[in-house]
Length: 188
Image (tube, rainbow, N blue to C red; front, top):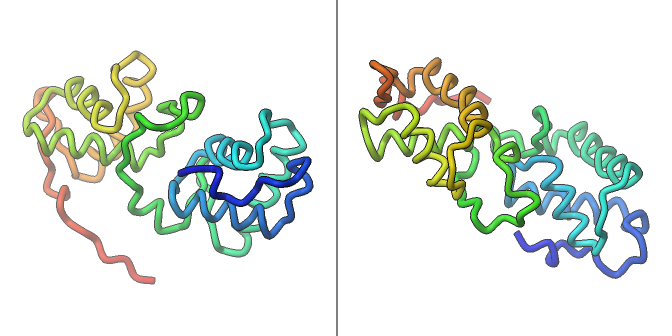
C-alpha cells in the first residue's frame, strides 16, 4: 500500500499526530496488508509521516496504539504480526517483489501466507520433491532463492501443512493430503 495515502503528513513530529489519525492509519495498513509484521507496519507509518528512523519513543507510541486497538477487539496480535482476527484464518497470497527493500524479508511473511505458497507449489506439481516445493513456493511470492535461512524459515509452515493433513510426504515427495480442499465451518 502507498503510505502517502495514510494522511499522516503535515506535522513537524510523529508525536504531533493525533491518536485518532494514527489509529486510522494503523487500521488502513492492517486492512490492506494484514497479517502484517509490526516492523512493516511501523515502516509504512513512518514513511507516511515523513519520518526516517524508528526510535524507542515512536516504537512505544505505536505499540501503545496497537495494544489499545487489540484491547478494543479491533485487531489481534500474534507473535510479531498484527491483523484483523479473520485475516489470521485466511491470510492474503501476495507478491512480495514490489515491497520496499528494507521490509522485503522472509521473516516479515506470516506463516499462514507461507503455507499458502507451499500448498500452491504442490498443487501445481503433484509429487514434487520437498526442496523443489520450498523453492517453487518462494518463487511464487517473489523470493528468488532458497537460502539456508529460507529453508529453515519454511520448516514450520511445511510441518503445519503436514500435521493438518493438507499435504502428505511420501519418500521426500509432497502430495496433496486428504484435508487439502476441505473448508471447515467455524462457529462464531
